[in-house]
Amino acid sequence: AQTVTQSQPEMSVQEAETVTLSCTYDTSENNYYLFWYKQPPSRQMILVIRQEAYKQQNATENRFSVNFQKAAKSFSLKISDSQLGDTAMYFCAFMKGSNFGNEKLTFGTGTRLTIIP
Amino acid sequence: NAGVTQTPKFQVLKTGQSMTLQCAQDMNHEYMSWYRQDPGMGLRLIHYSVGAGITDQGEVPNGYNVSRSTTEDFPLRLLSAAPSQTSVYFCASSYAPGTSGGRWGYNEQFFGPGTRLTVL
Image (cartoon, rainbow over all chains, first blue to last red):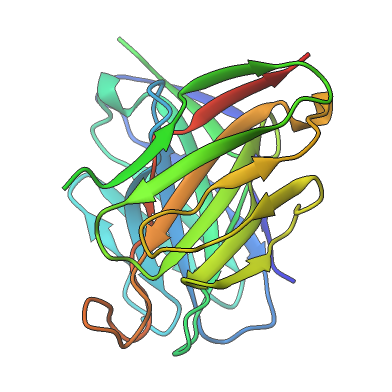
């Protein structure tokens, strides 16, 4: 079974600053995907960024980037130039890879991020 | 496309009552699943389905039933609600790998807006 750990229940940062959210995971799988989801107060789950385990290059999406350390089983999210709209709960998630499809996500407990004006 | 829809948005039940949370998607996705979100616990998988007529248990299936008679719908049934089932429930759907809409490997899961359920 896989586990995902987010050790920072809450974080806050000034607007326009950079913030890094931590995530570690445990798995014996070699083929998997890692994700960061954003959940604003509206409750909607929004996919922020995805990383394939077989890719060495860290994924980036505009102001969002990850630091994927496969050997250390670490997957942190960096938000640059933070904006008020980034205020949300952020979840790290794991999915085992399979050609037969195993679209089950295992989530961490979340980090509540507040951007301070 | 409406995407993934869930009804109701809010519901209050008394212990022992039954109800069905509805989930529908119009994207012709093969995979559908139900998660519950509790404070400090993240989202946990309740049940999932890889196609019409096929369902399986997730991490926390006790107290919940599901069926999948059509591709579009995946209702979640609480037969006898308990206070421990107070939670926010999310439905999600995605393509299956290698299908007409799905790629081999990863296919993005789309989440509904959630149902907040309170059991008194």
